[in-house]
Length: 126
Image (cartoon, rainbow, N blue to C red; front, side, top):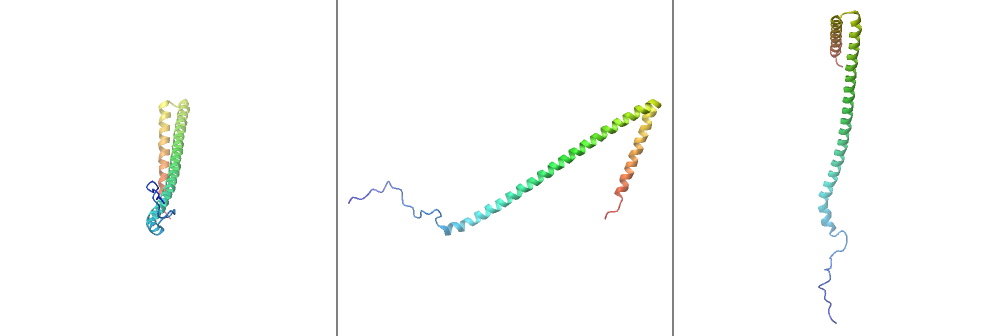
């Protein structure tokens, strides 16, 4: 019987199973598995932290924007009211008297507001 030429055939594999050398591989995989687990947990926590920070920043920016709009509206409204008051007083008084009287009233209201703010701060804390 002639012998076969086996030089062109692929070499035989020792263990065709999908998980060769289970003992050595499982010991070597524990650090990698633990690292992947920790990485997954840290990544999830970082994403949650990022979402919380972004939600906080969005609400803080929207609150600041709303406060800015409110302050601008109050300033414009106050300027228009003061202008209307000066024009109204200009009917009865000379212009210098109307501006002077309105300036004294604004300064007095500012001092009164400052006093009320200071008394709130002096209250004892609980």
